[in-house]
Amino acid sequence: MSIWNNLQAGRAPEVASGVGLPGRWIAQPHRTANLDDLELPARDLLPGFDVPSARRAVGSGRATAAFLSRGCPYSCTFCAAPLSSGRKVRRLSPHRVTDEIRSFRQLEIEQVIFYDDCLFIRSAQLNTRILEFCEALSNAEWTGTFQLELRCDAVNAMSESALQALQSVGCRQVNMGIEKGHLAQLKQFRKRLLPEQARDSVDRLVSTGIRAAGTFIVGGAGETMEDIDQTIKFACSLNLDFAHFNPLAVYPGTQLFSETFGHAAEWLPLCLDDKISPMGDILWRSADMPLSAILDSVAQGYRDFYTTARLSGALARAPRSERAELTESYEVLAVRRPHSWDTPSRALNTDGSCGVAG
Image (cartoon, rainbow, N blue to C red):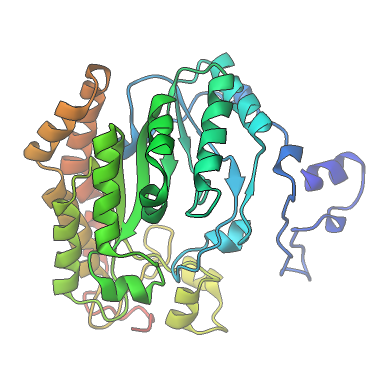
């Protein structure tokens, strides 16, 4: 907003923080201290509404994405969230949350995906913040459903009353970054998570009537094919409704990027190299673990996870209004999603010789 306000006032954009200009490419990131100062998103100006991805679809009503906070205090080596939004978690006030939720009702939006990295984190204020959020949502008199991004340890730490409150105001799914099925890689990623914690959080959500979804990362220094198979088997052993398998992406500015390319590496040429970034992101690989093998494993993860038996279990738990969409999502994820990796996998060198360190 500061950039827009300066331009509207006829001032040069360089007076605004967070702007990179010729001769000054390294810009200081802009942080709005009080998120309530931000205007409500003008969703009424959009030509249409977001269509959730297959693993996030709940019913067939209008959907949108939203953020109620910024920031992440964690230090996962692969993640760029603290770089883009800061380490301090800043949140909208409960009153401002009510205003935003009320706008969903006015636009007849029935599904919302809150993409906040750390809207709720394990802390002494966890349950208080959840109950404040639920009250703010109730005050908006909106009757739709929503999804949250949460860490497994936050799910395990919240009280039973807080979890029930989320379910009662429309929480239909919680998406968790589980990443790996073995402790060594979790430690290497500085994830601060145990596989047992992931299992406990999944079971707790499902028993409360909230769908559980998990993301998993394939690839990483020192990881073997046996380790990858272990992660896929671990994902399949969990009572998840959805699982998402990703090749390890190497984002500029992260610890993983420095470990892979060195501190002085230029990131733009890497992003523009079709072999290193065949789908837009820099994808990790090594001489011992070529990208073709990683992408084949990603596809295998989808084939192994999305089975008829798992769909039957998910349908048995789902309300009747969600079953058609759920069945269609499983078809997309079981049949089509594995093939989305075919073209880049076949085009890549099998020896991993793309200039990426092991």
